[in-house]
Image (tube, rainbow, N blue to C red; front, side, top):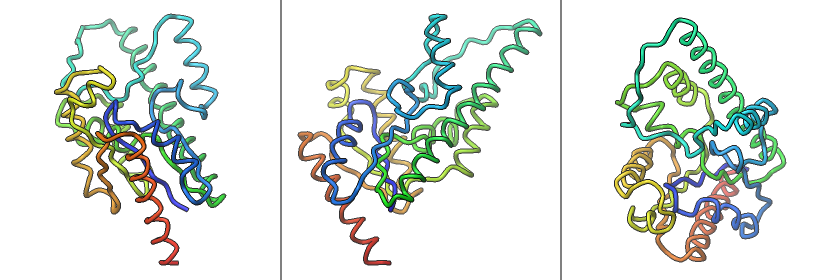
Length: 231
């Protein structure tokens, strides 16, 4: 079968559309969360679960909303050598586990593809980090550069990307997260990926959710039928 990634800023309805597609498509379908919010994922490595528990115990909750703003300021302080070594070690371990987590979920997707299922991705690491770790003009850390290189060169891209688009004002009214300006910037980030995949669908997500689900379902069904004819 094939993979479909639902992408869009917060408030665009990715999770709602993704879960409802399981019962709408004409063939067996697997819904798979591919974002960074570990609490939303059914599939996690043991190391990720352990890190999650340790953060809860220590009261240090890791940011779970995807990449931060490209212009977000990071305080630079001169640290002692032991602190720099400790920070480097933590960054290395975090990057290693992040890459392992991303490939683990890709392996889950491959398993369901072999079972002849359509895999619906709720979010996807490549488009989520494209404007931040891959092509960002803003200063990037070493771990961001390595992460971006691995995603860009080696990580499989979805067969179809469905961009759930809506005006930033509508998105902000739905969830009240971030700002209108940041949501508009995020929309532009996603749209610049239009030429990176062969099948990039822009869906008007400002409509009622039933209309959006119908639209996405029809597009995926047409792609499925096209794939069958080409065999």
